[in-house]
Image (cartoon, rainbow, N blue to C red; front, top):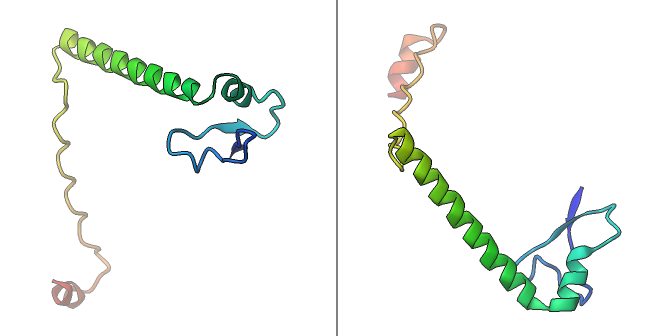
Length: 99
C-alpha cells in the first residue's frame, strides 16, 4: 500500500502544491527524503522540468507515429451510442407517461 510521505520537516507532500511523493509502507530507504534533504526544493523543480520534457518527447513520438501511419494526430470523437431498445416487459402506458 502506498501512503503520502512527509519530508522529515513535518510537511506532507499533500500540503505542498509543487509535488506529492508516495512510498511503499515497507520501504526503509526513503530515497526521496534523502534527495530533498540534500538538494532541497530545487530537486523537485528539476524533476518537474524533466517530467515535462519527457512528456513532450512522448507527444512528439506519438505525432511522428501518427504521421507515418497516415492517421490524424487528434482522433475525431467516437460516434454516439444509440439508446437501448425498450424493455419488452415494460407496459406501454408506462413508456408513454415517461415521455
